[in-house]
Length: 228
Image (tube, rainbow, N blue to C red; front, side, top):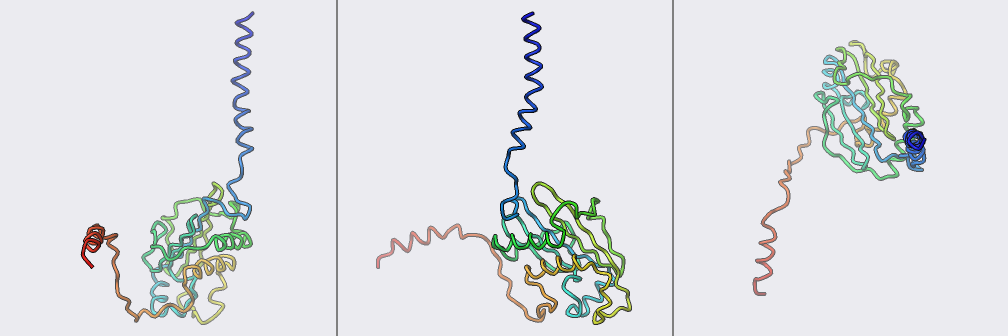
């Protein structure tokens, strides 16, 4: 009788432990802060274009809206924004750091994504390998990858701009999704990219960072010992 009772108690404990564990998990605080910002929040925007369209854009980049020019921008959880432009950029490239956003800017950016209906996993429409996305000769592919609260999702928009279409004609861009246009322009603005590109004729000197000087402390000691 005692052994039977012991087996029953053991079974009850074994069955009860998962219930206790799940109850404890349900009481954990959400990963979303009160202002809607998550500790793992990431917004990753990429624009890739077909070869034919890329040549047209390269001839006169200022004639084309910034959200259609090949580029990549990533906002990381700590506010660091990495961005770069160029036809050779892909979804797996990691651009250099451009700036650091304030927390208020991060909160505002996510609020805008929510307003555009991009701020939740239900907005995702692509689950494949992004590296396999290849635009047609006259096609634009706009990719928005978002991560928030332990979830991630990808939004892809693609459309063609006919070879004979003029960028000065507003109807040329009628096929573009207005919401994605807004999101891409917002990311571009944060990366200090505008419809009017910078003057590439200005040549800035290259400055290389070789890290801290390992001999600086010895130089400082030598100066300290020199008689005044």
